[in-house]
Amino acid sequence: GRPPAEKLVSGSAWKVHYAGGSAFRIELAEDGALRCPAYDGPHRWALEDGRVRLDWGRYGTYDLAVELRGPRLVGERVGRRGDWRRLEYLGKELQFLQYDA
Image 1 (cartoon, rainbow, N blue to C red):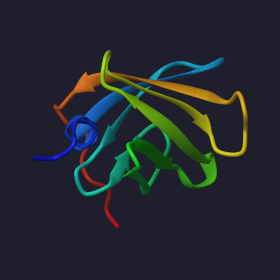
Image 2 (image 1 turned 60 degrees about the vertical axis):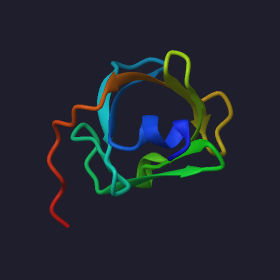
Image 3 (image 1 turned 90 degrees about the vertical axis):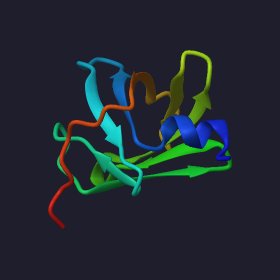
């Protein structure tokens, strides 16, 4: 079967926590779309070497470790040390519709 990290992350919803702001919901669709109405897309995500990479366009790229206990994703913006993100697992129920290309 698929690796545990891929099973967890693919087709999942998360609450994004960061310094100095309100948490918000994102969804990581199975087709690689990063869905987030709070920050207009389209954006992409990928799993590389057991880590999640969020490609958020002008909002930056984020490199996150997968912690199966929790579960959660933890990391920071690429090229900006200390600009951390912590993603809290919300489940497999996706609510956001796919963006029109």
